Length: 212
Image (cartoon, rainbow, N blue to C red; front, side, top):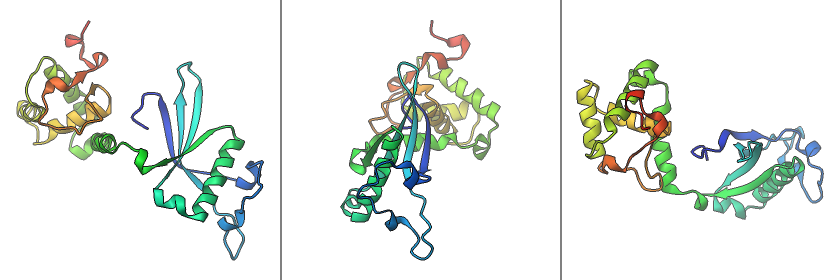
């Protein structure tokens, strides 16, 4: 979800405060299942994701999504909880739905996880923010018009700038995560693929090589 351009924000494990007060239609709901047996204190339920979207008309919209494994949908307590979630969001006129593992594109999810690891603070890789920006610009500049394997290109990049082995791959991943370059995220990213399979986003090019 975070990969989509229209997603502005994702809040995980969003708490459903004051469920009994918010839900207007309480018929058939058993809130006692989600209270402490000794004190009667309600547990704070949560929805997996509350997503903020920017619609094509510029307006802001919200989606609530619960991520569940298939086997959980066979449990009575889980179904009761999901019904509470559904009515909670319905009371607030927010679109709610269930997402199962079968609906998640595995290859794309793994690619996103792989590239997003590059967005941790630059100093964890021994770089300053300024150095990372410089190397990102240099990578894009050198990439333009290049024709070799991604693996060979990143190795040459390390040697050219006297960087630790793997730094070029790190910059490659970071540029994808920042959407300054694009690859087919629905296919497993393979460093043996040609650099010709990489699309450079025009706005990401340094001024001296910017495409007109």
